[in-house]
Length: 153
Image (cartoon, rainbow, N blue to C red):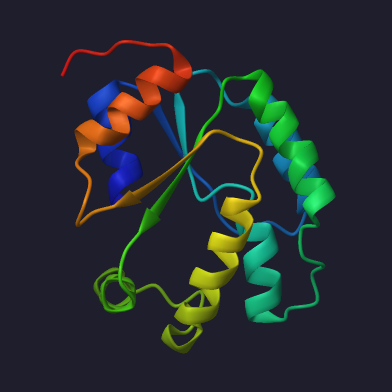
């Protein structure tokens, strides 16, 4: 969220944060058609694969076919996918500092594994942001190249 908000400000893009949806796949298909160009979408469709598995709440996880369908729509809009990689302790500390309790801290290992699995299977141009190796300028360069835009630094 911190990275997504920072990118939106730096690039002067709009920002959209996704949440929990019972409508699942249909919601993401509809939303992908609604999002405007130059929008940073924080935690979009891949969560529909991860959280039904982690929470075991009766929802059916997003299939790879459904993910591909959503991403084909996103590809038409010049979308990219950025995965923010960080260590488990940082994620757990973030849960504490933000008071997040949607998932338990004991679920972090599984969440990381599942998000990474679907990230790697994505059809979208992808960038893995490791805050210990990359700077915000690295991401902006990736965005500029993949979306064929140029923003002032």
